[in-house]
Every structure is written in structure tokens, then in C-alpha cells.
Image (tube, rainbow, N blue to C red; front, top):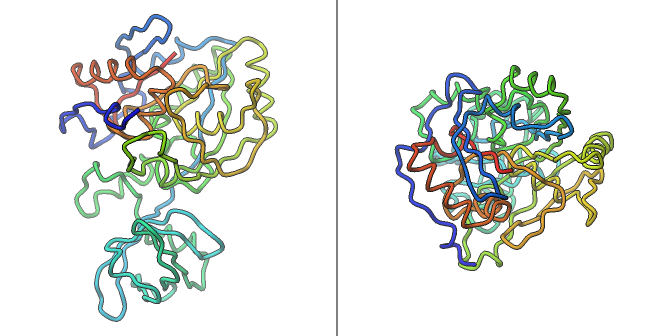
Length: 345
């Protein structure tokens, strides 16, 4: 398949710039794979679509303020770093802008005496290997000076992004390490989770630290040639057992978000059983992939020509997925990270 097979037209005004006032106030499109149909609903009705023997699986990763602003020394030129992956203590792979200005050996100042950095290697696609020097905990300093790395399609005036530090998190986020939120989880409120548990539906938490691979552009024409960059995930033994018991009892595994789906599929054997795992996954899901673990998927609306839309198309079927997307556009749903969602059953 070609990347052009996963395109659709989206008016710019449908890209959500701010979250709804209430987390659970979003619209939700229900997509039924068996009947090849869909209908409009609202997210707060999600508990009504779950059965007592199902299990809901959440990604509890937490976004850290991974965007840093500094200056090249001694020129003072402004630079921006997006921290992607910690290689070893205080050594990070980062996306740099403007990358051409950051050559090997370049010193970077962040305006704080307790933090300096140096470029130790040049990588492909504007990536740099950055060594930080600090007398304090690097995480602590980053929390003080970093910004929440909102996607580029969300526009903010200077200083306005401070409001997003907590809102661009799920309410159950507790494992620091993501550079982007698992956005399907942003809709959950404590009230909705309580209603789900009242229906007898267990809620399990896994971790996949959302990294650059999740939103990296697909740069090839043939989607068979695309590979998603590795992301670290973890599923504990007791969580794996809980999920497997639900499946053995005839329940559905309902994945909240494409990141949860990738983690579950990465940990699944041919028999569909989930194994406890802590590893990196480079699993790239495209149409033709046979899902072993996930039976239903809650997901936001994704960018055209993206690996996330390709994954959704693999789960729902490309024609059904794109038809549902076109309906969502016509019905004026809100798109992307702070937008509405769809439940594919």
C-alpha cells in the first residue's frame, strides 16, 4: 500500500487547539467492524459499551517537560532541544533546532548555573547526542526549566503553554518518561472510571513511554518500508495475569489508545496470551497485520498519512476507517490530541 492510501481532507478549523472544559465531554464515534457501520455518541457513555467480563487497559505513562530552550555559546544564538531518549545518565538523544548550528563540541547554556550541555555526536535527521552537566538531579532541573512538548499543530502564545502541563496528562499518569500524551486517555475522568468499575469491568494499567516514533512522519511511499522507532514498554506479571483471565473468561481486551495496543500486541504470543515484559518495541502495525490481543480500541482521530492512522486502518480496515473519518469531518468532530475520539468494536 502507498502512503497516499491513508490520506483525507481536514479543514484546519477542526484541529482542536484547546481541550474541552470537562475531560469526559468529548464526542465519540462508535465504529462497528462486524456491521461496517458507525454512529455518533459521547465519551461519557463509554461504560455502557463495556461488558462485565471485558477488561479496559490504560497506558499510565506521564509526559515530562522535554522541550528545552537554550543558547549556543559563545555566540548566544537561540536553540531548541526536544529530549527523546536517555542513553545513559545525563546523556540524551535530542531533536535539535536549528540542527545545522549544533556541531560536535558545541556548548549550550540554559541560563542556569546548575545546568550546561555539550553536543557529543551528530545523528541523522537533525538528531544530536547531548551530554548534560549538572550538580543536581537532571530530572529536577528539567522540571524547572522545561516546557510540555505540545504537538506543532497546537498553537500557543508565549507563556500560555503552562496551562497544558497538567491538562496534557491523563488523570492516571504516574510513570514519567513520555514526550507526548497517550491522547485517547485524556478523555477519562474519575467519574467515568468509577462507573466502569461499578459495571464490574476491571481496569489494568500498562506503560509505554510515547516517543518520537509515535509521531515521526512516514517518509516512504510504500508503507511496507516504514519502521516505527523503538519505544519502551512494561507490563507487570500481575497485570498480564489479569488480562489473560479476562480473555479466558470470554471478555474483550479493550485498549485505550494506539500506544496501549502496540504494547499489548508486542507482549502477545500466537495464542493471544499476554506475557509480562519490560522491553523496547519497534512493532510496526500496517494493514494485513493479525491482531492477537486487542479486541476493541478507543482512539483519537489522527493525522493523515501517519503511522497511527495506518494502525487504526489495520484494526478497523482501511475503507471503514477512512469512511468513518470522512463522516467525522462532515459531522464537525474535533481532531487530534485535544479532539474527540472513536471506539472501534
